[in-house]
Amino acid sequence: MPIRRHLDPRSPRATGAGRRRPWAGLFLFGLGVVVGGVAVYLAGHGSVWRSAVAGFGGEAPPGPEAETSAPGAGRRSGAQHRRGSAQAAPGSRQPHRVGGLGYIVGGGPAGGTGAAHAGGAAAGERDAGAVQGAAPGTGAAAVALQGGAVGTDRTAGAPAGPARIALVIDDLGRSLDELDNLHRLGVPITYAVLPFESQTAEVAAALRRRHDEILCHLPMEPRSGGNPGPGALRAGMSPEQLRQSTLAAIAAVPGAVGVNNHMGSALSADAGSMSTILSVLAARGLYFLDSRTSAQSVGFRVATSLGVPAAERQIFLDDDPRPEAVAAEFQRLLEMARTRGGAIAIGHPHPATLATLAAEVPRAQALGYRFVQVSALLDRPPAAPLPSGR
Image (cartoon, rainbow, N blue to C red):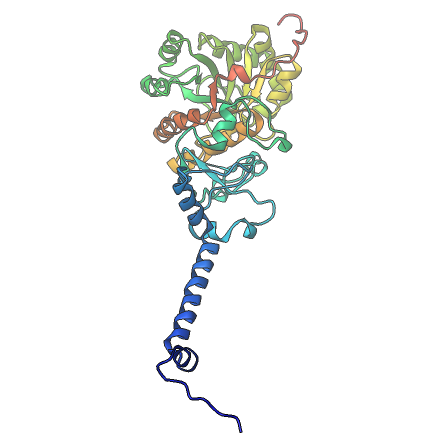
């Protein structure tokens, strides 16, 4: 029969093998839970871990305004950053807000595409979004413009070179008061002066002294039956009457280098009448800006066929005179200039228009947009032979 030896209860073997302390297992289990929790936290907060490591290495972590370098990638923060780019829709582009203006680098303003805006999308269809802003003149969009490239999306066919904007202020000639506010903008503006208003001569003289670009704002008959003002050209006039009325209007605005139509949705759609009027401009070396008060206007087409340097208006800034509407149209102007290389806008000396320009023009300049006179954006076709007697 085997002999069982009894251990001294005070010996190390007895205490180690037979009487383990019950809390040791609990301690190990708790330690495992803590280690696992730390591992999960670090896996989900990699940016925090990387920032701490960079800090120990003497390298400052990126600030909240840092941008990604991938084309079309936006800044993310908080929960968006943790979710990562895997949840973004394929091919989507994140908007950047640079200097208070909403853009998608390589695309249109935030909430819309260039094609939609070029087609005349309403201001209510755009959503600037809540995007963190960078300082004016910084960020990918500003760098692209200031570096001489308009946008970064070369596949969209955006032209190279700085985006140019021509601002035209219509309906001048009734007061001198608004001229000082316009000159304080500090950018080239083209001034369209009505020929037979109460202060036409004084306004034209003030603009000539400052060497500004002047247009004769030629009144023409509208379809609506509205009153275009004194000296208006009308559809029932004979060719000779149209010619003499055009000559009289141009003479009333000395220093004018071109003409644009005031109203004229009816007359500008009549190719015969426009040919008579534009032949007068051709004989005197003046250019024509088609105000495009009607989609049926033939003014630009007839002008270029006669060899008259010409351009067309792309944006009306203040058809809706509310400040927010004017600001929205100014954003459309920037987008169109960016995608086309240049754009022409017409506005009026309304308080909301002047206030919007005072706020937005410096921002646009900080982004690299260049303001020019309309004469810098003309199509210049070869001169056509003029009929005898003209």
